Image (cartoon, rainbow, N blue to C red; front, side):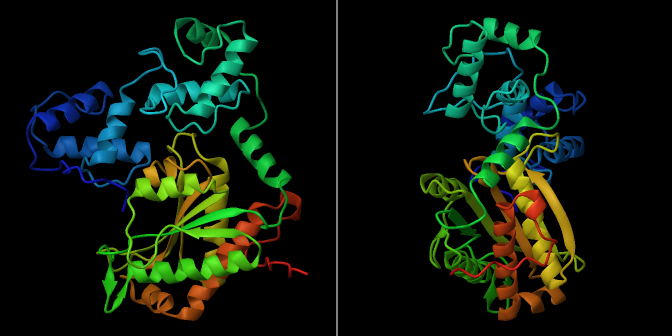
Length: 375
């Protein structure tokens, strides 16, 4: 249930130039042996699945828009091209990720290492260039590359991004007054998601989002929902809405469904590649929210997982997707249809949001936090 777009996906049985292009990319990454060009065979499917797993994409063995773009980005190595900030068509690729990680290791705030050359990356690069006597033009060319490669890592004692983000959240105080939080109920409009009788995924998560909105607003936060009952924004529209609102936190809500009769439980997702690059506050909030829900409902804990879905990647604030149970599982379905249980989940999310803004020494055990009453 990732965010593949309207591109006609390639999969087993597909053939032609687009398949050959995918195979060439997989071979350049060392994931596919030479073989039949232009035919999407079993070896190609397995290579795609491996690539998706490593890159934090939805693993389905098919190439839709998101997987195709990730394959294109993976081809770039740092030094292959000049990198600079283009607000209309920002550079995206593994070379950008490598540049961001290098700047962060050296102690420069280049934003999140998301592989997108944005304004924060340009600012961090210019600061580095000024400090090392280079032309501070925000362009990563040969001279800047040489300087980056000659320098050892400066920051020690933990990931700089984690230290920086965590400090800024704690310094801003534990209250929610003035916080902007965007709650994103999945599906909507004509896209109802999975249906169990008259109950649909879209209706359930909208009800849950409304309950969360009420609790957060009562605690002083300013809350925005990305949709009403009749809208189904695209992932790009949902992230743009959160960015335009200058949100402090983005919470996307889903319930899941699976053919397997055993699939049940609560999972959380945050931006990350699976190889160490991640939204550090997003990772912490994904863990807090999932564990609070599990502790208060008794649902199965399916863990937190890094993903590079655009819904998580394109937000300029910590973003989390929370999958609260499986409508396709009889026990989870009974729980989700209970309005009291949905109220409990909303309280769990409120507790997780409040805990996110507390310093570690003041953070209570999971499932015990009660929001202080406002005077």
